[in-house]
Amino acid sequence: MGAFKLVLFAFIFSFNLSWSQNIVGKEYTMVDADNIYGPVITSVQISSNFLISLTNSTVNFIMFRINNGNLIILGDNRKSLHPSGIKISPQDEMRVFSVSLLKKLISDGNETNTKIEIRNNNILTLTNGNYTLEMSWPCPPTCD
Picture (tube, rainbow, N blue to C red):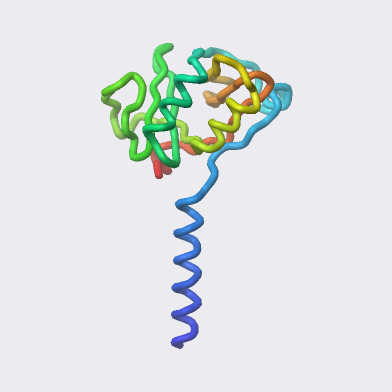
């Protein structure tokens, strides 16, 4: 019985460790994203340099939402990043991406502006140059 508990503990510990290090999102070519997720219905542009500066205020995750044409960006633990000090209801769904993948998207796309887009079925994507990021998590329920 002792060996079983030790194996179970090791499994739970490794699961928790890997959960906290999850990479959220997947980079596609813009053509593939258009084919998979459909056309862009609405889009908001933001400076890529400004987005990179926002990543200095969060460690693991960055969250996006377009509400009535206005872009809302939150960091870890739903900390408001843009607009500064915005209050958002805990029930309002944000889309979560890994900070590391956002930085990779901006580096790979190499454009001065990044587009936050809404596509068919209310799918939120991020596009920079010829690359698009999707496969985000909804927050809630998966916020950290």
